[in-house]
Image (cartoon, rainbow, N blue to C red; front, side, top):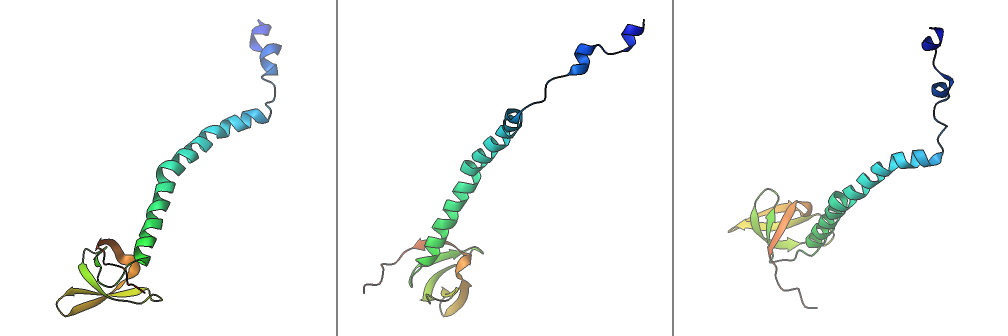
Length: 114
């Protein structure tokens, strides 16, 4: 009867202490998830940001643009060192728009010849 109450020596010993391989195997799923997120989410977003910055940098006078607020207008004045551009949204109605708010350039004009 008494032997049933105690744990046998075989069960009491348990598994041997794991080495570094067990810890590495635990991190493999997290590393795989990060790699998948990098290729599916982070990398395409970085490409979009890069193309948007390139588009903003190349806006010239005469281009038709769409702002993030949905306003469509024609660029009338661009200063290279300024964060704003001047856009004509109707006859004799000009507004200043932050370059970062440009969401699309619809009609590109010919580049200025030097």
